[in-house]
Image 1 (cartoon, helix red, strand yellow):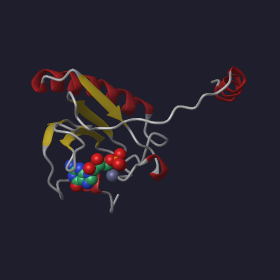
Image 2 (cartoon, protein in one colour):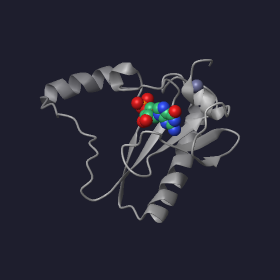
Image 3 (cartoon, helix red, strand yellow):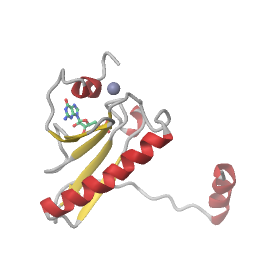
Image 4 (cartoon, helix red, strand yellow):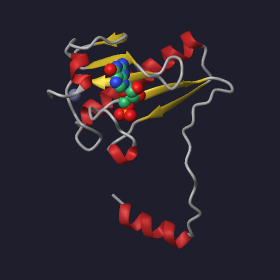
Length: 134
Ligand code: 5GP
Ligand code: ZN
């Protein structure tokens, strides 16, 4: 993808602080992190988002995420972490190449991963459940 920043990072055209790399994935530090140690896991192949990514690739990516998260916990001495993965501009995605955020959480930090909660009735929940059942 010609205009994709992450494809350029993967291709070596744009530098990145890489902490792990294999045939299929690159793990880098976010250039504009929400917290110290904010990591991004990128598949080397370009998939725009969750709706495009290959299921098997996503499975291997998540397996790698577990490894990276445990490593981060150990070396950064973390107790908490958020995984964030945005899909589509409306959901806050700014780089349209699938990526998973691993965001370390420290006591009293100012990272916010929050939303207002809806107070649905049981009927409304049942309606959504019926619609979404796989
Ligand atoms: P999104 O908002 O799409 O979920 O996340 C994109 C992330 O990419 C942001 O957290 C942003 O800071 C990061 N980012 C944008 N440009 C660059 C870059 O050139 N290098 C690196 N390492 N991260 C970037
Ligand atoms: Zn790309």
